[in-house]
Every structure is written in C-alpha cells, then in structure tokens.
Length: 150
Image 1 (tube, rainbow, N blue to C red):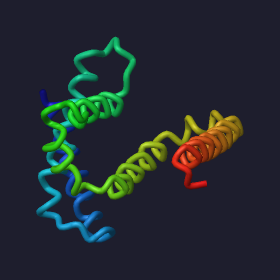
Image 2: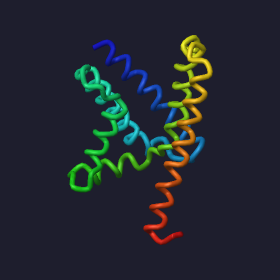
Image 3: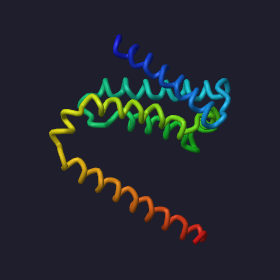
Image 4: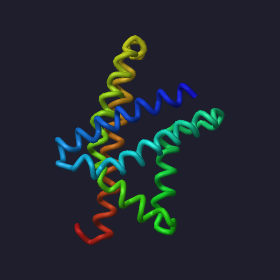
C-alpha cells in the first residue's frame, strides 16, 4: 500500500509539472486542464496497480494505461464523449517533457550498465532511429496516397 501511495505522490508531482509546462508552452489554462490531468493520473495509477497484480503477465504499465484509455475512448463506449471531452485539455506533447526528463535521469543512474554495452548500443540506437524514420515515412506515404493528398 505504501508503494501505491508513493507512486500516486510522484504521479501528482509529474501532473503538476505537466500542467505548468502546458501553461507556459501552449497557453492552456491550468484550471481547465486539471480534470483531464486527474483522469490521466488515475489511469496511470490504475495501470501500475494492474501491473503489480499481474506480475506473470509480461506487459508494461504504459501498455495497460494505453488499453484502459483506448477502451474508455472507443466510439461505442458510453464513456467516450465524456473521456475525450475532459482529456482534450491535456496536450500530449506537453506531457513528454517531464517524462523524457525522468527517463534521462533514470538512464543517467545506469551509466555503468551503458558503458558495459559499449559500441553495441550505438548500433542498436541507429537501427531504431532508421527503422522508426522509414516506418513513419512509409505509413505517411500510404495514408496520404489513400486520402488523395499526394
């Protein structure tokens, strides 16, 4: 139970940082974005709890959060209109700054492990970047062709 409370405290702190970042970066009113941020925090906490309850299922917490959000926002669900209306005030790009900062801090704490991987990590990173770029380009090309834009 104490672990859940610690996670909730951290999620609330991150939520506040995201709200401030959205205000500064995108001009989004903090008060109007609070309900959406609370929903995001609840979904994130629920995903962490599900991951803890199902340790044998090799599914990351963010994937649980994505599934929960997907189910809540499906057009045939009675929650879709309410869910999308409330979370519409939370800008996705505004959430990435603190998340990437925390990811950088967590990687910074594991520099010894990265040193052991040496040059191999560079090759993996380059392959990931190239694959992501070409994958995105191919999908964009197909979608734009289907829509008749190009």
